Each structure stands twice: as structure tokens, then as C-alpha cells.
Length: 470
Image (spheres, rainbow, N blue to C red):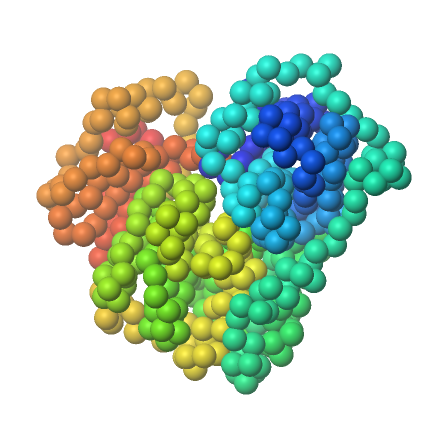
């Protein structure tokens, strides 16, 4: 079964991620476009550096061209945000990127985008799945790649300049120029180097890069920016006197930050830094949208500035929808993805990293100093997390315990309320919380907790793990 999760369709290479299945997904999208009467609009396709990504982009392009749909193919590995930018900039109905984002190297997949350059809604991906279920291999229409290039059915595009210009136009370049910052980038063997380095060099930053070669194993690491995977970056930044270290995941839609002291800045803190900066230092207005597993410190900052915080389920499509509905200033999630009003309607590590460099330049303060300022005003919020693997035959019993029977551990603090909007989230009256939910991208049960101390947050995570026997 081809199933879309919170971040598109992702599958093991050679098992589910095959040429046949990529073509079935592509034919389903072509049928959808015909049904929606938008088959006369171009469809943009991009891809990352994963194994088979370039070939899968061609497989998809051949099927769409075979269905009479004009394809704009970015014939070079690029960040996912560039593909989303193309959909938005050209006002296209759909587009896609061949990527499994931050998943392990033996995964690949397809992210499907809709009008405005946003992740497809669950309703839309459900429709694609329904189309797929009615297809067989014999239903797939194809035009050979070389023939499609020759007759113009597939057009090669190179939109990186337009994307870079849009980012440069959205940040305070003059302030960055005056700051003379030193920046160390770690694209984690992914696709961020060219675009992010170009933006920062244009703003006269001194930029160095590590881990930028093409390596489909991502150096043997998970291509997800975390304290563990950015270990080398965290040592090099203070050792060599950089002002900031920026790491990006495999397709550059998420980021991880190392401050000037070599400390990993949690994705929750990145969101907090940028929202506080935009309100306090830039004088901007607007609410913030966060997912159900993201820090409640955002709620405190919003309240202090006369704004509100909107909580939505996990999945950036929910962030985008919430931002649209409330004309929100910023939206993001604890996994390191965020966007700002006016930019693309999906997460973008290139833009977020550039805006953090602007923050340092405009405030004249180090990242650690701004965080100290925030915690001094609003108190300390510490997040703990635990990813739990489970056997296939355990999923049903875990699901029943969490969603059907709605069983909870015996907590030693007073519960305010419990939400089952996305997993099981317990809100405590002292402001702390804990949530357990199934990952939409990997076979994992994710547990997150937030409290005033790390020990307390870890204790909440462990309490849930023990209760579920994980």
C-alpha cells in the first residue's frame, strides 16, 4: 500500500520505493489534475541528493508528460523549499519533490505540493491514494524522457536565482553587512550549501562549509539536525570563533543551530528566538501557530505582546492552514521546521537560517544572550523527548491503549485536561505537559514532554514509556 504521512509518501528503497510505485503515484497525480481540470498547467518537479532521487524525478516526469501535462524539471539536486517556491511564484496548482527529508538513507519518497507552495492536505493525499488503489501498471502512460525533452513536454528550469533573490529581499542585508559575522554551515551532505551560502555571502558574511560532498549515505548519520548529529559543528563553532553554526537536514526544509558557545539550540528555542525577535525588535504583529508537540513558551510570548498562539496537529500542512486562517506572523514545529508570513507556505531551513543571522546582526547580541533575555522574562521551559520503536504486532495494542481505551499513567501532579486531537496529550495545571503519538513518517511512537526542569520533563517521558512497556 502506498500511504502518505505527515510529510508525504516515504518508503524503503527497493521494497516500496520502486520505479513501478513512483509511476503509479505519478499517474494518480495526473488523473487528479485531469479531474480538477488543471492538466493544462505545468507541474514542477525537483529532487534531493538521495539514492535514486534523480532517476525517480525522471520517472515521474515521463508519466506526467505521457499524460499531456507540461513538466518543469529542476535538473539538479535542490532544497525542497525551492520547489515550493516555484509552485508559489508561478501560481501553479501542483508540484513535487523527490525526497525522504530527514529519514534514514535507505528511505526515499515524494513530497506533494499544492497551490501557494504548501504541503498537500490530508484530504488531497487521501484522494491521491484513492486514485492509486484503482490503478494497475498497465494504466500508466509514459513518454520517454529524451522524446519529451525534444518535443518540449519536459522543460529544464533553474530557479535558484529567483529563490535566492526572494530570500535576500526578505532579510535586512544592510544590517548583516555591518555585523561582519562568521558562519559555519553543515548541510549534512544534503542540498543546502549553494543557496544558503549564496545568501550569506551576498550579505558579506564570512562563510565556511563542512560535510558538503555528495554522499547518499549522509556520512553514515541520520540527515536530521540534532545535538548528536551536529556534534562536529558544535565543537568547531567555538573552537574557531564562529558567531553561529547552521545545520540543515537532507532536503534543507529544517535546520539545527549551534550558538557561539557550541551549545545546540533546540528547535523549540529557534522558534522562540524568531517570534520574540520579530515582535520585540522588529515591531511586527501577529499570532503564532505551533503543533501540539511544540513549546508552550510561544504562548507566553504571544500573550505578553497581545497576540495568541494557535495549537494544531503535527504536520506542516496544519501549520500552513492555521497561519492562513489567522494571518499569523510565524508558524513552526519542534522538529526544526518553520516559515514566516509572506514567504512560502511550507518550512524552509534556508530562510530560517538567514533570518537568525539577521537577528544577531540587528540586535547586536549573541544567540545565548537573547535566549537569556527571553528566559529572564518568561521563565524556563525545557523539553525532553523519546522515540520508541515497536514491533509490527504491537501497533494495534498500543493504538487501542492510547486512542480507544484512553488509558493514562498515574501522574503525581494535577491534570488540567487531556486532548486526543493528535495522539494523547496531557496538560497539567502547573503548565507542564506530555504527549505520546505515532510518527507520520517512521514506524515510531514519539513521546514529548515540557516542564520547568529537564529532570521533570525526562521523568514525564519515562513515566509514559514505562506505562506503555516501551
